[in-house]
Image (cartoon, rainbow, N blue to C red):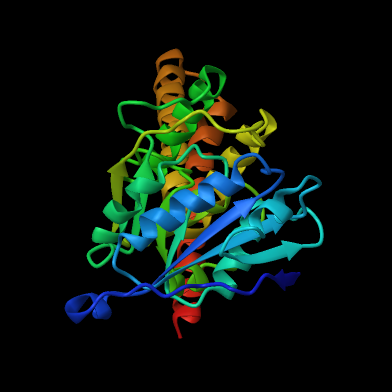
Length: 307
């Protein structure tokens, strides 16, 4: 990974109380976004200059094969170039690692997320651990073919996290770097970065706030593919298994238990107890036992990491 065009970070701070406001680093991952990166940088700079905070903009070129890096280099940003395409999450982690500030705003380079909503996120930053721009505003342009899978995954994630998640993988959010560092061992290098950190914080009772935003049509072609839905599903299950395995094993065991009891009552009525009834009840206790063991391992692991 190399770093070029070091300018960079102009510091904009007002007087008095504004000087006490935390500085902000805006991280923009970019992969083959030569058409959108320039206008997005200018929008970000205009918005951030009006916030009255010290700020810097970091663009992470994720091994683009077009002129993304050259276009970004025409503007006052810090440009980090990765030698090859390593993934969305890897780009975010590289940008966050290079940031000068603990308050991190992430936003895509394709112009879909409204940069003008960043001040609204920052205003919530003192009260919440993470602030997410939720794509539930009046003008949301999510392709129809992605909506069913997105809805199903969101409902599953909400159930497993035990609270409503309006937008699980929004690419516009305010993060606190200490929390990113705390869960870095879980954060993947692909598109699942935002989903993972959302579940990690919610499952650990951190305070997450959602701010409604619009979502525009993107400049260029989307990098999301149908196969990513399967990856998101596995990621949700894996993350919740790490933090709250009982949320999976308790209801699964209950299904087997109810089946076993119902089959046992039916068999007693027929005066012929079957193996399936006994197996159903035993499977339930086995699943509950595994869940309890997993819960203890999870709690012990988090206790060790907190030391």
